[in-house]
Image (cartoon, rainbow, N blue to C red; front, side):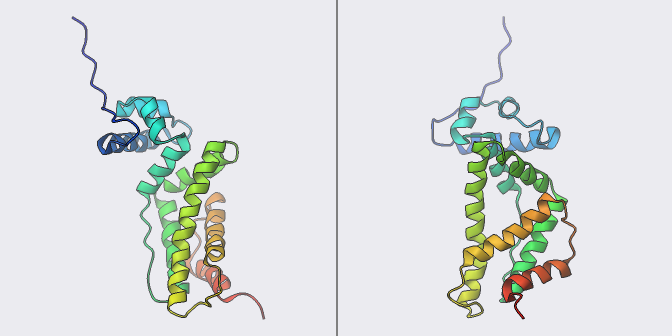
Length: 196
C-alpha cells in the first residue's frame, strides 16, 4: 500500500480563502526568515504552505506582490497625532527608521526596491504600494491643514513625496541610525522652508 500524501489546502478559486491565504503568507515569512531575500521563491513558499503555485500566482501575480504583502503585514509603525505637523512627521520617521533597523522589514523593502529596477512586475507592485503610502503620509499633512497649521494650497502629496524620499534614501544607503535631532532638522526644512 502506497504512502498517503499530506492533503493540500483547498482553493476556492479566484476569491481568496482566508485560511489558505494566511498559511501562504506565514510560509512566505518563514522562507524569508530562513533563506533571506535571495533564497525566497514562490516554489519554496508553495512547498512550505502545501499550496499550489497557480493558487499563489492567482492571489499574488508576482513574487514582489507577495513580498509586499508580507512587508505590510510585518509593518508596525506608529504615526503620532500630537497636534503639531513637525512633531507628527518627525515622530513617524523616527518610528519608521527604528522599524526598518530593528526588524527584517528594512532588508525586505531594500531588496524590493532593488528588484524593481530590473523586474517590471516588482516595479508595478512597488509603485502601487508607494501610492498607498503617499496617501497615508498625505493624511498627516491634511490633518495639519484642518487645524489651520498649513496653508490650504499646499499639495500634501508633494510633502509626502519629500518625506518618503528622505526615508528611502536613508534606507537604501543603510543610514537608519540617524539621530532624532537630524531627522527633526530635515522635517523642519520641509515644513518651514529654507528661504532667508
